[in-house]
Length: 144
Ligand code: DQA
Image 1 (cartoon, helix red, strand yellow):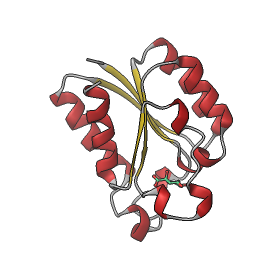
Image 2 (cartoon, helix red, strand yellow; image 1 turned 45 degrees about the horizontal axis):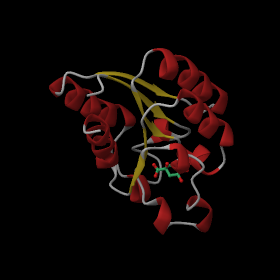
Image 3 (spheres, protein in one colour; image 1 turned 90 degrees about the vertical axis):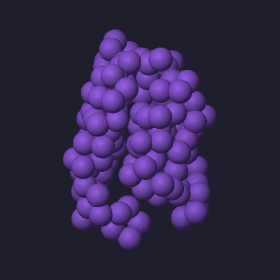
Image 4 (cartoon, rainbow, N blue to C red; image 1 turned 120 degrees about the horizontal axis):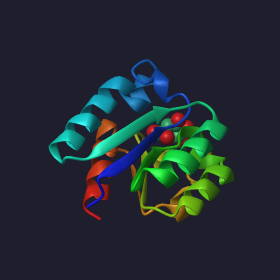
């Protein structure tokens, strides 16, 4: 079982709670992180959690902590899901289990959200369950 998981939140996710609550819910990012930490503690798993609005910073984290520390990666790439071949390449380079998560169901929204550059290099994708997408994503990694 993986014991060290890098958790990455992409752009605008620091605004959760205030940001389009009808789409993303009213839960804040720190409360989602709290839920993840609780679950991780129960399973005796270590998490390193980061949020960044900067593509390059996410790539640096994947290439550093993702490569040198983590055994698996849980990532909500936010809008970079639909734009970033560079994040996809970073995940492919690190070559560890990746679960891509989204609060909203990206397949049931605007056309441009249906494409994920990340999905082809991820072990799987969980989309549409609000804060539970993260919990399900963590469970998925723990059950690999
Ligand atoms: C999101 C979906 C993306 O399309 C959007 O750009 C986000 C959040 C989600 O969690 O539902 O920022 O990744």
